[in-house]
Image 1: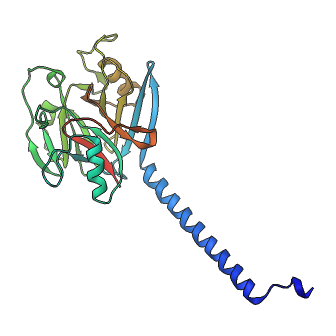
Image 2: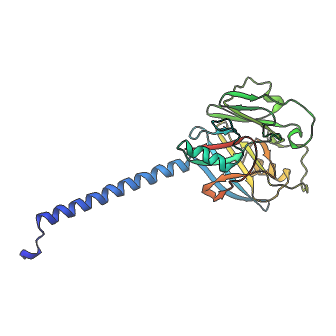
Length: 264
């Protein structure tokens, strides 16, 4: 019986080990909860619609802010999602989501309105006729004002008293007041990779990017029928890229202008 009794030193040592285990377990549990909360602010899913796969990102602006990126602190064009990831990490942050944010000119200047952090970098393009998807009227503006956002045809946006923190002009509109853009044709053979943005509510923004080539009609129908957006805007085509780690989509290439991003 005497040999089975633990010494005072042994008991102290066992107490120390148990406390260390509980402390480490508590820290790990807290970290996991924090990570889950950070990730849960962005809802991501892969959906199949009309035999096409799409990656979908839904963001509640009341929980998660969205930013636009174009140049780094040195005034150099960021151009790619890889470069954006580097810029974000240099600031001690993590890139949660990124996507090219609209059309651009050859020098990577924004094609149309661009507002960054409340500063108008380029004014609204009001030209009603021109070459390419951008001028397929109506084109539109995606804008963020505090914790609210919107997608409006450019002609309507220009008449509203809106002072957004962030804004990008692109085109064409995909869905306008719950109606598909009138020029789109069902069964069109004009196919491309495509990405766009739509509004579920004034606080909820949804982004979509296709896996394969899709026509504008089907892409617009995705926003209208599957994502329940009354208004949606086409961002771009074959250059489209997205960084969505939770969906294992890690496009880090690209060479474009403005980029939409979420960091933490």
